[in-house]
Amino acid sequence: MAFATEKERLIRVSEGDQEAFSELYLHYKPLLFRFVIKILKSEELAHDTCQEVFIKIWEEPSKLVEIHSFKYYLLTMGKNHSLNLLHKISTEERSLSQLVKHISEQRNEAEDQIQSAEYQKFIQSHLASLPPQSRQVFQLCRQQGLSYGEAARILGLSAHSIKKHMVKSMRIFKVAMERELGITISFCLSVVFRFAVFS
Image 1 (cartoon, rainbow, N blue to C red):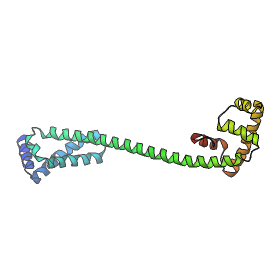
Image 2: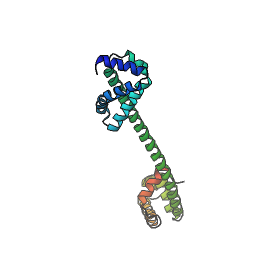
Image 3: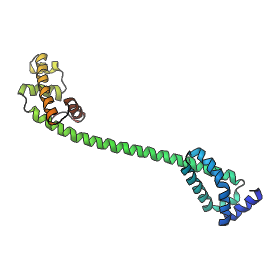
Image 4: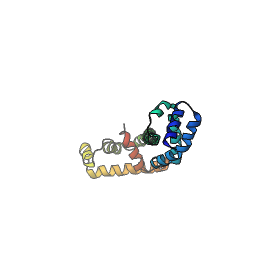
């Protein structure tokens, strides 16, 4: 397309000549497509970008009469539009990722809290069935997180006795959990201790 012809065509497009616009589109669309696809790396996005750039040109025809190089003007529009599109896609992906992560965390936390409450109820019911001293040892060592030595000093027992009480109590819980809940005691306690100590 010669300069004079291009200038004439741009003037005609600025005046609303659809035939001139179609000629402009058919002549420059392949060039714009080859340019933007290098940025977008997607044929679908490149085609959409070409359409949107030319639509913008058609909607703002007054600018055409001031253009000295339509090719430069077109490629600049294509570059800006492509970069804006990539930024928008990146932002949307991050937002979606954060939303999914937030929903997942909220869901898992809610599920774990329900699960934790069920396990605590189970433990409390079996804790009540322990002999008084074994129950007291369990509460000190598991609820309050005391060491065997600290519990021994409070109860006036030896650390060895505290350990025997704990071993006996944990064995009772282990058998009950595996039989009634189908889970290991270590798994249950890991869930329970994440949210609360026993009341």
